[in-house]
Length: 151
Image (cartoon, rainbow, N blue to C red):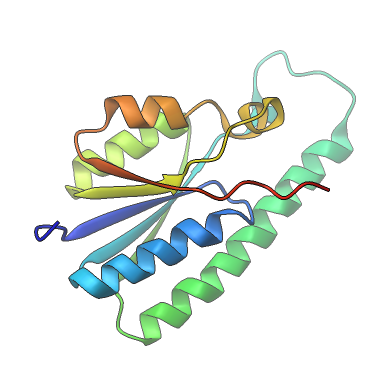
């Protein structure tokens, strides 16, 4: 892994992403690499034909995204002050395609993302991107294990 110069962390805008982001900081520090954190937004509530009467769920989803982004911004700013080069990207669209475009455009050497099992709710909220990302990427992928805790 001597040639790791650009690392991309795929953020799902959930509290579980912090562990993947922390791996990114650690590896960027170790290799002197530039770190990219991508938030690929897949808004399930903007899909055509979406007409179910659950506006509170859409509001809760947007609140979750906002709160997580603010929390990650604090972590990122803290690492920037320590000298880590971090570029935060926010894209909209299919997460797999957005990550692939970023890997290609930024010449990413390593992707870091969560490895936990995606349930039905996560597929709905974030799309089915883990398998797609792993299969189509031209670079190495580090999967970080962090299962959601049982309630």
